[in-house]
Image (cartoon, rainbow, N blue to C red; front, side, top):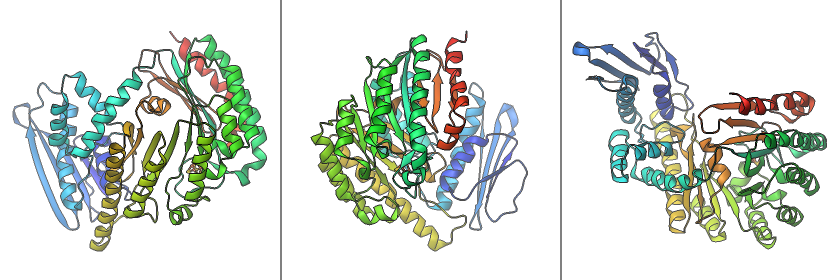
Length: 491
Ligand code: SF4
């Protein structure tokens, strides 16, 4: 579908907005007046009398045309924001009507909507005014506004703990027992990558030893350590312990607030590994069921059962782990509302300290007939109902949202939310999402994000994505890490 820009270049917001309705049907942005397809969107900005602007939006969908014009005076306002807002507003209303979808996030497209709350509060708006503004001017549902305000309250407390010299450490273990069919990470199945693992472990330890002195020279303060991937517990207990010991040997852990290891897949968890993690000072683990429905687990390619999740959880408790996160997904292939609600109830009954709820997007095909449109609306409604049910149950059972981000380029950009019991927030999750302080990432696929202390400058350092590249080009991995010193020492 063509999205035509005429007399302006407000591509980003308009394209993001259109993509929330038409994910799967790539919107093609053009400055040519190309009305050749069956469906199109036209947006125009033109000067009008007395310094005013005339903004036009028209859409054609399912052979029906809609059009609206707005004439307004941008004097005293940020002209770009003025134009973007009014174009998006007109487009949003037309797309709601044309598709029959009303989006819970309204016309907000950003990945971090919580930031808006901070911005409004800085401007002196109280919660009542924020509610009114988001609902009236951006069409955000009351449910999402509640979620935003609650998340902002919690998140702000965590952000305030970070100092200019703070940083977090991420270690990537990009191996899993098998590959889930929805996976968007670079992760190799253990069977395929077995031969690579000993070298990978050795080199990761070398990278740890290389970077730690830099951090010491710069006087940085380590706040959180996070082992992710992949599934770190896909390694043997001995391999994982080697890496954990290297972190302890080379970095100063005296200020650490949190040490997380994603145990991830229940089929990788053993009592030996759980004891080893506990003995080595790991304070938080993640056991990720995704769903408690065995049929759905089979369909998504996870080779474990719900019973194994319960067993792994019990084992972790026996080993003394008192801060456990569990990841769940709404919208998995084959899952329905009833089964999803059962999953939520079962997980709440287990009582983990953290529950992270992710959303999978509902893919939409390029052109929908009436029947497909109805099916799509149903699916969309199902995922929205799943999120509503989970949000309510979590809240009623003492879980509060503490971090939230939306997924770009998915249907409606639905959200992922971290919930926790009081005082059990996962700090690393907040810091990485907010880009509060530097994250130094080691291992294949690691992307370090350096944040200027007290400033807003961000610099990324990319490690090679795949383990075999990381291993074969390790010298240049270390070479790139010198950018840490250069970044912090620049005038
Ligand atoms: S466990 Fe996670 S990282 Fe591994 S394949 Fe599944 S989704 Fe991907």
